[in-house]
Amino acid sequence: MNGRLLAIFILCLAATTAMTAGAQTRGLELTLDRALEIALDDNPTIKVAGLEIERQRYVRRETLGNFLPNVSADGTYTRAIEQATMGGLPLGSDNTLQFAGTVSVPLFVPALFRTLRLNEQQMRVAVEAARASRLNLVSEVRKSYYQILLAEQSLEVLRGSERMMTGVVEDTRVRLENELASEYDLITAEVQLSNLQPTIFEVENGVRTAKQMMKMLLDLPADVEITVTGTLDEMTARAAAVFSTDISDNSDLRSLQIQGDVMERQLQLLRTQRMPSLVAFGNVTFMGQDQLANFGEVMMGMPPRTAFKWQNPINVGARLSVPLFAGRTNRMREKQLSNAIGQLDYNRQYLEAGLGVQVTNAINSISTAREKMMANQRTIAQAQKGYDISKVRYDAGMGTILELNSAELNLTQARLNYTQALYDYLSAHADYERIIGKE
Image (tube, rainbow, N blue to C red; front, side, top):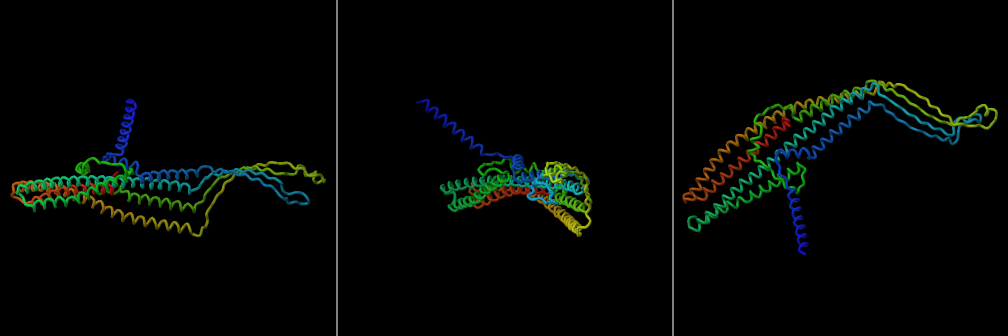
């Protein structure tokens, strides 16, 4: 009996351990580098971009296949229900079997060469689109990661303020019991503490929302609990401090340039429709028919005898096609495409001007955020000193609860402003790297 109880206990312990281990596997600790790695591996937009590159490889192979010989074969069986006759003699055959094989080889087909060059540009389009997807995803993951840190650090500041206010409330209550403070002071401290609660709830919800966004970007299940490591200060220290206005690697700009190259190739392909093409061909035919075995016997009035005879003609040749006139449709298509190329060039110039403004604004935002960070650091030191003085005055009975509350609010706001400035700096830095196309 004791052995059975021991076995049951061991099984229960093993099940509990397995459940605990399973629960632990639902948690995921992320660094920024790890988050970027997961996103670039699992995000659906990256997978779609990879499939598009693979599709373009198949398109190129399809074009290359047109340079290979084209071989076809077919077979036909014919049964004559009623034959044509002449002078009582049959002119056809009751049964006919025919097998034919045809081979054609392109010798000079300009459209194939132009199509192959067009495929190369289309592959560049797919590669650049994949690069744009990576750049946008990296920027979104970084900003989402910074958003989580902002929410968590803001929550930490608010909870620190809550602890201070709780201490003030308890201290004021003791002072009231000893008739060293008024009931008004206690009420004021409690109201200050109560007013802090809704803000804390909002920031807690902000943490959950930011983590849900991160899960979506990383394509993680909703029930996985993620925790992020690091601080905004550490991320700011890692960010590059040298900035350039070079936008030559911007993905949108490069995509327009490649699209212009694609249109140029399309125009060249369209012009090949006015050029001749030369194709070599050959065919082999095996044909069997019922034929008269001896025509002389038939002429003498004897019953006809038939035999199944085979023929196998072989032919080779070349086919030259020269387009002469197509109603000027090709010429009008060329003009349409040339017009589209001109429009694309104007769009590219306009985009360059807009990107120049964007990168300048991003650098200015980074500089402004840096100035705010330094100013807020000084403000925090001053606000901390002011709070310490007001706390000493309040404890000594020389200050009022209003002074203490005001000093505490100033300190909390200074810390929140500093955290926000860190986030603004990192967010602007992520936008800057996306604009210049830094991978």
